[in-house]
Length: 291
Image (tube, rainbow, N blue to C red):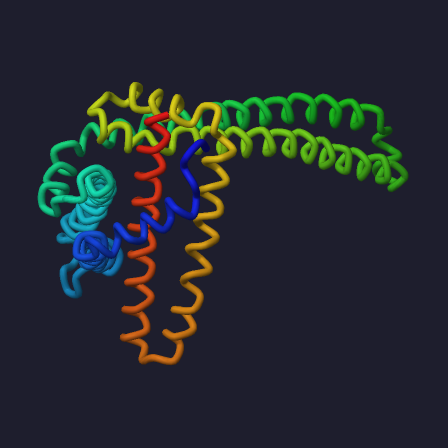
């Protein structure tokens, strides 16, 4: 992709991470702790209830659990927006602001949700339509073929067992028809989801960079990826493979540590890898956007 080299981009992303590790590791750790706390509240109140609360408090208890889940969803969106904003600032100025990024995440929460919804619909709309069409097609063809076969079988022969072979053949044909229609539909749906996921992967980055609306941010992401789809896809896949390979040695080390220390180590590595991935995609987006 022109002057954007994978290893240089990955190396620069790692360097940016360690330059501002207090942000790109501290922020994910803080978010993880808050989410764990809220998740505990949601579990206790939503599923376990309050011992001795009785049926009168069931509605209030369930409401607290649902509220905790909704707050987790909101904070998850804020976290994504804030981390992307910090990563973009790190690449552009080298001075990401921790609290300013979080504040910006809250300020642009609603717009960020709209962008995510727009992207989600863009990715799944055609696969959903294909799935519905495939189900209708299978129902029509299957019912027609199965019905014609059943009508050709003599009821007396079926009662005596002579028509069972034909009946079993009808079921087998129905299964083959389902495999054919379902297989073609699955391949088409899988291709569209992967293709459109790559095209739309920079929508939130474009939204935070340009302050554009949901549709405009999606269109910006599509235009950035246009003509470079395989490169972007390859960079993403290779990046995920490397991240997994890097985590394996830490997993081995964690096995020889106490449960608490090993768990903390694995959590830090996983959260740090997530921040490096966001830095990597931010650098890739900015580089592509210059072309």
